[in-house]
Length: 279
Image (cartoon, rainbow, N blue to C red; front, top):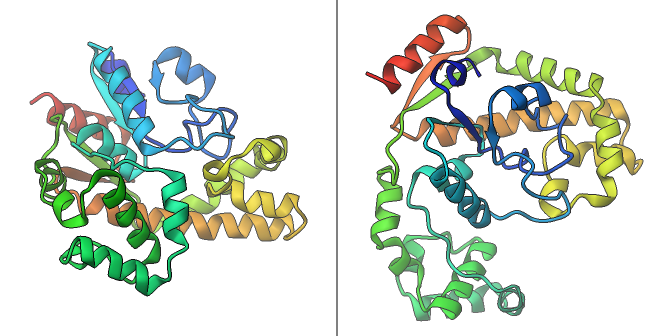
């Protein structure tokens, strides 16, 4: 927010769950006051009963990026959504009926079928993962491309080598050993702000994606009587920690991101970011 104030930027959220309307407390969505002061894009762009794919998210994001002539701050924690904006990430075609039919194959038969179409498929996907094998077969049937061919495209090579489609300055904040206490405090604040009530209100309108979000999945278990509120809160804290570790691993692999410690003071952090952004 402070960087946006100083440079007149628009904030683009790449939090996959802030995209859903009504999921406010559990996603730590920016407040109405923040959004009134600084424009926030890609927040509240889908109903919670829809399953917003990364491909659709990317299309909306690019359309909105192209519509702005102001500086853009891409902010958030969903790694694939982030890369769908800055990198030449492409998505293979899909068809639920084709996938359903392929899912009925025995695991060995599916692998054999894939290797017949692409003998080197095992160099690019885990053949022990039935879901990935079926997805690869779906792409073979719909596009005639096996994993080897798709992995050799210029776009795929650029993604692997972290060569962006749009130049950007990447900065991350690493909380280090303080992460556990920060997560516990954050979840407690969400409970105090009405997370249980929010999920109860949305329960009948949460689609597959939204219902799996950390915070919502655990509260649904409480609402359904499968766990107590205390157990639900403990589960949210544990699963948020797992998510944070996965996100840290994802972003730490990206050599384009410089890292700041979480205990850095605000002015030093803003100054550092602005100096890197505008050398």
